[in-house]
Amino acid sequence: MTSLGASLRRLVPPTPLSRKLATQSLLFATAEGTFLTGSAVFFTQVVGLRAAQVGLGLTIAGVVSFLVAYPAGKLTDRVGPKRMWAAGALVGALMFAAWPFIDSFGHYVAMVVVFEIVENAGGAGRNAYVLDVMPEDERVATQAYMYSALNVGFTLGAVIGGIALAFDSVTVMRWLPLFTLAIGVVNAVFIFRLPQAPHDVRRPDRDAPQVPVRGRGPLRNVGWMLASMCNGTLWTNQVLLNVVIPLWLVQATDAPHWLLAWLFGTNTVLCIFLPAYTSRGVATVADALRSVRISGLFFVAACLITMATHSTSGLLTIFLVWLGHVAVTGAELYVSGASWAFQARLMDPARRGEYGGVAEVFSTLGGRWAPALYTLLAMSWHPAALPGAGWLVIAGLGLLAVVGMHPSARMAERFLQREGIVVGDLPASVEAEEPVPSLIGDPAGPVT
Image (cartoon, rainbow, N blue to C red; front, side, top):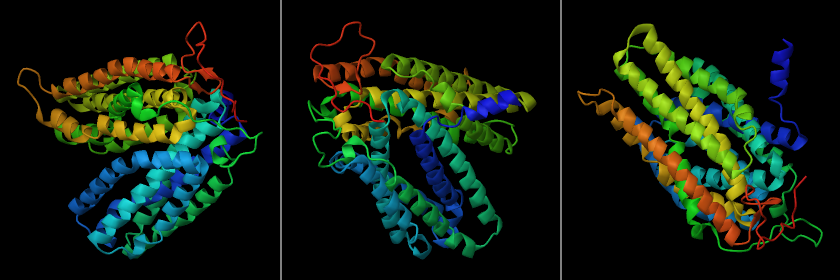
């Protein structure tokens, strides 16, 4: 019991600010998770849409999200990350007041498109704020705690949404968005009350910390764009997790369908308890690349294990499908830590919003194609000589992303050095034995 208590205490963020950020993640995920759990019923039975219309609307919103990611990032740098985050959270929450009155496909598309723009802007502010306000040595760990809190919140949201679904009432589902509205407003107020970060001080006095803009922006940083694209491919582990392996279980194995609940339950539990452990010690670009390699090994293992279930049966299939899903979770956890470290070490502190917008664009290019391609490869390509061979191609694509990430990250690192940009208190390449003479110290220093 003592060791269990110690383990649970390690899940609690160690500083007051990191605890506040984890609490905010919990609030946000509880609100969103409640609506998402019942969204399929809401869209079809309350709004009256067909499944194809729901998918089309989300696709349109995804295209808009792609187009506005970079402008939203630049706007974040202009108005300040906390302002952008808080405004996005508040407007996004208030929009849930309109959901009970949406009754046509046109209204639905307009709603999801505007909501996607607002969420995108708020997300750009959130990502920039965490990097801006946290001391350098706490950034990755804090994001790990926030990730755990998100998973707890989505679990709570799923429970609340499940209770609403249990009433089997269209009226209950129609007004369920008001619960998300209420929690969302609390979340927005919580964000407004967080301390300001350096970029939130629009007219600072001479003693206020600020990060000057210097050098060229991320659209000239080829390494950052390539690294973001590779990162998008690495994050296609979520496509395996949520789409391909569940479809494979149902259509290509004799595993019982109830196993799906165990798969997602295991993933949720692991993503609550392990991020603080798998991201521990990930601080430099070299550390992040090591995590990328570990993530790649888990990705390949998941593909090979799942592929093997094409010719197994019974309890062995159940165990292997579950093990493959656990391996995908390992890929998710390790690429999470790597992604946070890349954000902390390879983004110009003066342009975090802009860098985040560029990352969003290129990670989309690196992974948006995966649902269609992975499903086709896994479910439809079965040469007689090697059944399930599509899984080998999927594993190969994951390995290509791992290999490509290494020169891309180093290229991004060298770009920051050439531009004389310091990330945090240290130069971008902390592994170098000699300091780079052209680098200029960051006047902001750590934010405490």
